[in-house]
Length: 234
Image 1: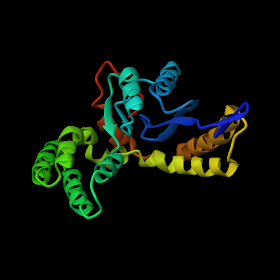
Image 2: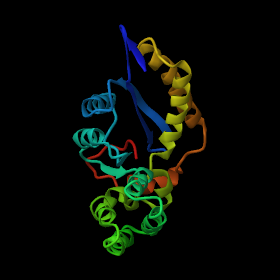
Image 3: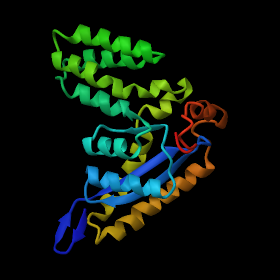
């Protein structure tokens, strides 16, 4: 919440983190936005490119329409991974509590597969089993689940790190906690000073901590990069 004249308005802090070509996590950038809209994300991503960010091999996010559209517009050569955790929550929200265990078990069967072809086959199998009782869930699996399986095109040992936005969500929770202590910020600059300092500190911690993915292992992902893409972020 930020004060603008006599009004208090809600704004968004847009954040991008990455796994770089050394296998380390880093904060790529952050920026204030009036909302999580297509225009805000587009401006933010373009600013990252202007600073030298090349096309990532994989962009991981939730399925916010404005965010998806901005990713496609700026990172047209990149794969997009829908956060597995967000997708599973979205599917489970479509059914009542009594049906959630059955749907949850079906989702686990899909994501426990060891390769993409098996996962896609399991999607069709589970959708067929749920068709009669839960047609909306079956349709959702068939139409949207492939968006949450793109991580399987990458080395198996990277899957846990790239199948969701969980790493960023932990950072977000700390930012929200600190913002709630303040309550209402006097202006945008005050937000950037406080939350930006937390992000910079987090980046410094990642820089001296153990690599999220080893340098030897990251070479397997970089080998997937088309020749037209610079060797920047996974």
